[in-house]
Each structure stands twice: as C-alpha cells, then as structure tokens.
Image (cartoon, rainbow, N blue to C red):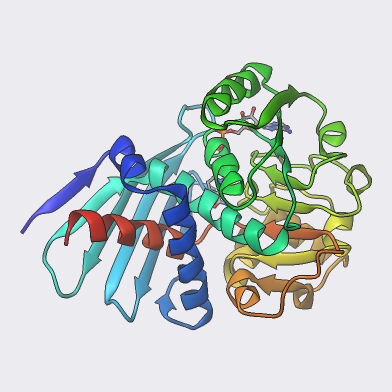
Length: 306
Ligand SMILES: NC(=O)c1ccc[n+]([C@@H]2O[C@H](COP(=O)([O-])OP(=O)(O)OC[C@H]3O[C@@H](n4cnc5c(N)ncnc54)[C@H](O)[C@@H]3O)[C@@H](O)[C@H]2O)c1
C-alpha cells in the first residue's frame, strides 16, 4: 500500500488549466446527472475550517478536503485533499491550496466559456489575492485576453499580480486600477475574488453586455454583487443547496424579493441546455463544491496512481 503526497508545486506542474477546465466541466455534467453523493460542506468556526467530500458513483472514488481559512495569512487557504477508490488500497494526498485555486479557476473557465460573448477579450479582475492568478488564467484559456485591469484595495498586491501575469500572458495589455466602478465600465468579463461584505460596484457601472463571475462570498454575511444586477441578469450558480446555505449575495437578493429561486439555474444543466442569449448580462455565482476538488484529484490520481 502506498500514499502519494503532492506539494502545491507538484500539483501545478501536473495539471494544466485546460485539463482542469475540461475535468471540471465533465464533473458539472455528472453532478447534473446525479452521479455524485455530495453533502453540503461542514463549516466550523464560522467558516474558518471547512470539510468537503464527494463520492463519484460510477468510478467508486471519493475525495475529502479539509482546510483552514485565514485572510490575515498568506496563503489564506491551507490544508489537504485526499483521494481514495474502492478497488485499490493506494491513495493520494495533495496540497489543498493548489487544488482549490485550480478548481475554482476551472469552474469560472467553464462558466465563462458558456456565458461570455464569443469575442470577449477585456477582463476586469477585482481582488488580487491567492485565487486571482487562476481566475485570469482560466478566463484567458477560454477567451484569450487583449486587456486586463486588476483592482485591489491593496495597490502593492495589484501591482505584483500584474507583474506576474505580464510575464505569462503575451499580447495582453495589463493595467492596475483602484476604482472598481470605473474599472468595470468597459469590461466584457468581470471576475470578483474578494472577501467583501458589500457590493463591489453598482449595477449602473456595468456595460449593457457583460459576463460577471463572483467567487468571493461564501458565507451569508459576505456579498460582492448588488441585488439589481442579480435581478436583471441570467444567473447561473454552481449548486443550489450550497448556494442557499452560503452565498450572501443570493440570500440577500432572495430576501429583498429581487429574485426567486426559479431565477437560479445550475451550471451542469445549463451546459447541456440551449445556447445562451448573449444579449443579456450574465452572472456566474460559485461558492465552490467538492465535485470540483474531486475532478482535480482524479486527474492527479490518473497521473500518479495508475
Ligand atoms: N467560490 C470558491 O470556490 C472559492 C474558492 C476559494 C476561495 N474563495 C473565496 O474567494 C475570496 C478570495 O480568496 P483569496 O484566497 O484570493 O483571498 P486573499 O485574502 O488572498 O485575497 C483577497 C484580495 O481581495 C482584496 N480585497 C478585499 N476587499 C476588497 C475590495 N472591496 N475591493 C478590492 N479588493 C479587495 C484584498 O486586498 C486581497 O488582495 C475569499 O472570500 C475566499 O473565501 C472562493
């Protein structure tokens, strides 16, 4: 019996963003098809410790992730992802921070590919922390970017991320900004990746046609998007039970009567439904579900345990 241990660097070297997006897309389709057993995650100490698990019935494989979350620490997320199957005794343990940024980026890549205009090439990213680089890499994988604007209340972080990404993204003009409302005004795609507790910009700041991804809020007290945007957009979510438990912006909009549950469509079914109407604003709200971690862990298991 062996246990493979993978560091953050080994995870990153093993899995490309394209592979992650394809794996997470297949995962969302399987989730819609009822192939996963996936309890709502356990949040301890008001979300500072999370335990997430998913069992994929067809492959008799399971993933469990445990992590701690502390925004006063760099990186904010630390922990482990473990993978096991019924047929083999060998298992795998991988760095949860690397798996999380990859799978969160990948979900945004899947949603952006589905929802953004085919020629979208201007991204505004709000929040330049641990999740941010993979948000950009994922969007760039499905919609090659000509312009990227990075906004953060911490201007040093925004500048450092701009330098990192400029070295990776040939042909993308990258700038930093401090005013989120001004920075989203000419965006084709917006990514929100902050622990904000109130909306980052008003709906009126957005252009008529735009796709907005929001990954930040994962507790009922957190919010990145205004009610009006949710009320007037096509809203796609990762998974209804998780969203109703954790997404501050969706809960706020529901309580305010701005939207109803019928206005929410899960990403899995949306992937196999009729093509999106690109004339309307679109929003993808994700709190993150264990299936996504399972999808990355499966890629790792295929490479290291076969
Ligand atoms: N949906 C998911 O699957 C998922 C996965 C991982 C993390 N998250 C969440 O995403 C958020 C970001 O995670 P992270 O690891 O990058 O955090 P982080 O602390 O590393 O970075 C957050 C960044 O946002 C900036 N920021 C905070 N408030 C801001 C504001 N009002 N305007 C502009 N910038 C602001 C901070 O200065 C910081 O640079 C967190 O809330 C985290 O819990 C969600």
